Every structure is written in structure tokens, then in C-alpha cells.
Amino acid sequence: MQKLFLVTAALASATVLTAAESWTGTVVDVMCKGKDLANHTTKCAVSCAKGGYGLVLPDGKFVKFDEAGNAKALAALKATTKEKDVKAKVTGSLDGEVIKVEAVQIQ
Image 1 (cartoon, rainbow, N blue to C red):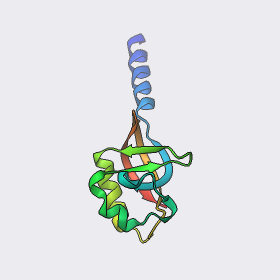
Image 2: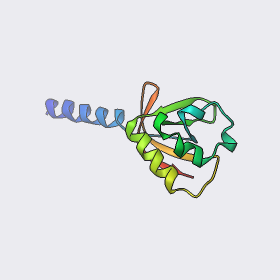
Image 3: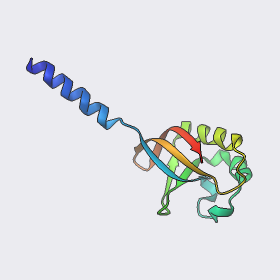
Image 4: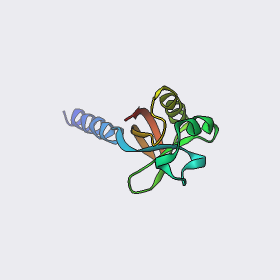
């Protein structure tokens, strides 16, 4: 019985540690992260895809996406009708200074 409790507790802890987080901010390519975000165009972001993407949070901090997140961001940018100032909700987990992206939802 005690072993079952320990195994259950360990699994519950692992579930809490891997729970997804979400952030809201402006999706931008790495090359333009320090520029005027309100006027940064989707077209520019798509053309600068090679450098990767990240999210500028409301406090101004930039958090880079992992490779899978770069692909998801590019797909979302290509699908949106927004022409500039692309806000998004990003779901994933933070690994140091990089978000392991599960989803990018343009708002």
C-alpha cells in the first residue's frame, strides 16, 4: 500500500512539472525583436523566418521559440489576415530562455 502511494505521488508530481503554460504577446522574428512592434508587418516576419521567432511579452522581455515553435509560428503567420502588430497566445513549456511551443494562436 505504501509503495502504491509513493508511485501515485511521484506520477502526480511529474504531471504538475510538465503542465503547459501560456503567454500572450507579440510574435516577431528574431531579427526585428527590437524594432517598432506596432508597425512590424506580417510580411516582414514571414520573409525573416530563417532567423526564427519569439514572443515579446507585455513587460518587453523577448522569449525565443524552439524549432517546432518556429514552424508553428510561421504557419500561423501565413494563415492570418492581420497585416501588422501580430498578437498571439502561445502554449508550451519554458526551458531556460526558450519556449518549447505546443501551440500558437493568433489573436
